[in-house]
Image (cartoon, rainbow, N blue to C red):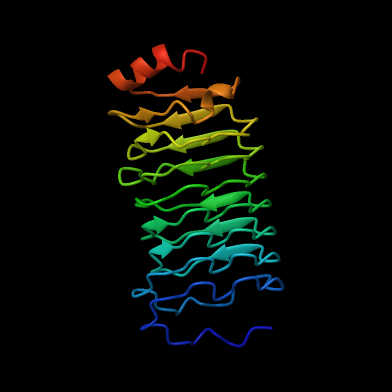
Length: 219
């Protein structure tokens, strides 16, 4: 069992890498609502391998979660990220095979590859508050999410260009974007292999019209 960590003074902590790494008997997150994370720059693998952890609500003030933060949390079904979150590292939820609900706040501007890869029970994702203007790697973003049916993208999600971004998304039927200006569509995303997928662009641009005619006529 874990000691009482609710009153730990974390105001001067800048590195929380792997502090709960592979705590396989951890079922629920201890009360860390009083933790101060303003100075924390590193949260890589913080809960990675916590195979019994079923739900997580992170405390207010957390602005970043690092790479593979929840990777391999095979019992995790729900996660709520707090308002003010700015950055989510690569493979953050990779192989969270029981994950069904993700609540993401507006304002997330930094994400990376394999974020939801292998989340085989996710059926829908609302990414309308997430931006990709400063993102360079969306590879395998949703790879092998075999139950994923719909994705909602916001105005600031300006690209779908990650290699094998949609590989294995056999149930995906709708990608809805609210983008009103140029949106980049990559040729190697595996989107074209999804015969039942519809990419819905309410506000067409010259770029999306070109891509529709030249590369995505069957999508």
